[in-house]
Length: 258
Ligand code: PEP
Image 1 (spheres, rainbow, N blue to C red):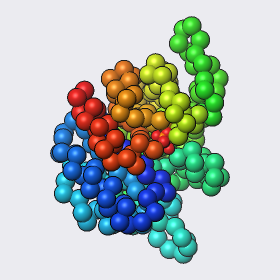
Image 2 (cartoon, helix red, strand yellow; image 1 turned 90 degrees about the vertical axis):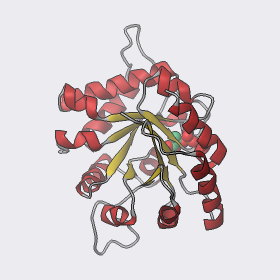
Image 3 (cartoon, rainbow, N blue to C red; image 1 turned 120 degrees about the horizontal axis):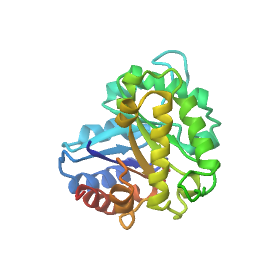
Image 4 (cartoon, rainbow, N blue to C red; image 1 turned 180 degrees about the vertical axis):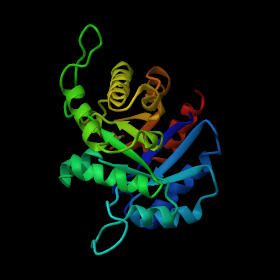
C-alpha cells in the first residue's frame, strides 16, 4: 500500500497568486513515487487552476462536497462536479465542519455515499474531543472509543464491504488539531487498531484490512516519522504545516524513506 500524504489547506491562501506560489514550491519538491501519494486539498475556488498546472506526481482532493450530484442546491458543490474537474478524493466530516457547520453523522453518511457513487474516494475524518487514556491492557478508555466507534458506525451506515477499499479514514483527535499537541505514536497506533476492530465488527477482517487509516493533528517534519514508521499509519493528513511549501515537501521526503 502506498503511503498517503494529504495537505488540507482549509480556507487558505486568500489569493490565486499566493496559491500558485505555494503550489509551485510543493510541485518542485515532489517527484512521482509509487510508494507515496501526495494529495493536495485546496479551497474549491482554486482546484481547477491548480489541476491545470500539475505536471504529475500529485493528486487532488476537495475539502467537502454536497450529497446530491446536481440541481437546485444554491452554493453547493457536488461530487460529480469535483470528479469532472479532476479531483480524486474528498475530505468528509472534518471536525471543523462538524463544529462550525453543525454537520451531523447522518449528513456525513449521505456525503460518503454520494462521493463513492461518483467514483471519488472519501477521506472520512473521525476523532474525539479531549485527550484519551488507555488502560494497562492497552484498551482505550471511554472517549476515543466511544466517539470514534460511533462516528464510524453512523458515517459508514449502508456502505458496502466492497467499497471499503476506496475509503481513507483519518484519525484526527480534535485536541491535536492546530494545537501543537500531537498525539503520541503509541496512542495513534492504538486508535488505528481500534478503527480496524470497529471495521471488522461492521464487516469482516479482510475488509477491515483494506481501509487506509491515516493520522492528522499537528503533524510536521519533526514528528511525521512517529506516525509513518512508529505507528505504522498509512499516511498523514497535514493542516497548518501544509501551508509552508518547503515544510510540506520535507514531510513528503521523510515519508518516502519508509
Ligand atoms: C486538520 O485540520 O486536518 C489538521 C490535521 O490540522 P493541523 O495539522 O494544523 O493540526
